[in-house]
Image 1: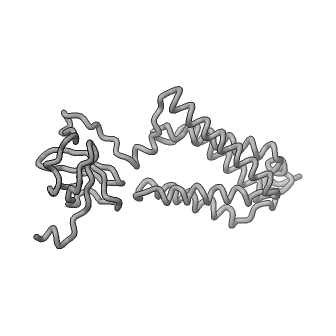
Image 2 (image 1 turned 135 degrees about the horizontal axis):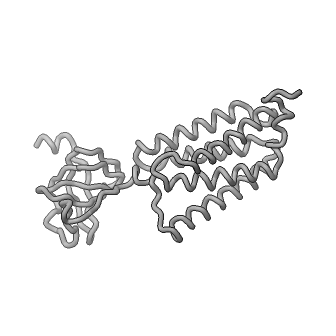
Image 3 (image 1 turned 90 degrees about the vertical axis):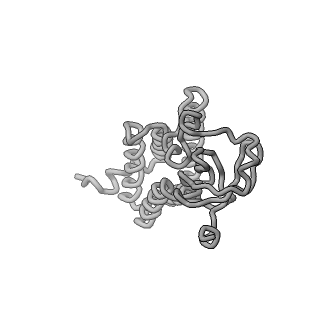
Length: 225
């Protein structure tokens, strides 16, 4: 009788058709999970499909534990993306996960086809959710500015605010590169000159381009003056 983790028990998981199904299910469910505020049923199903995929390929000897390490490192980078500026960590995380999947199977060709099908399914799922159902990606709300920019909230239109050029303000949100600054008790949408600016930093308004206000962080010397 085969044990639970014996190669024979999990041989069916490595079948090309099953691989495509598992990765497609995982990609669609995890894409749907992006539109949920917390971990829901789609997320559980998606992660379960990935778990079955990796356990099956490790148990049958097709995948090494190094592949699992790559996958876990990719997940870590995706999680870190929530707290880091820019998108480098997220891109690297997705890349590591894809690489780990490609090298988990016995045939690189089969795995490449499976990954491409899964990516197409994920893209179609996202397009349907956004275009047809008007859903917003909840995960991105942690990364980009999501405050209501209304007059009642203290926001003022940036159009023709040339008087702001050269003024000093305070970043009341992180600028990644977009965010909000406070000037003369006014909340104003702004973008950094390029670098990430932490919340609470003093900034200088460099230019106003229509409704776009560009700022940079003040140096310590400038703050002391």
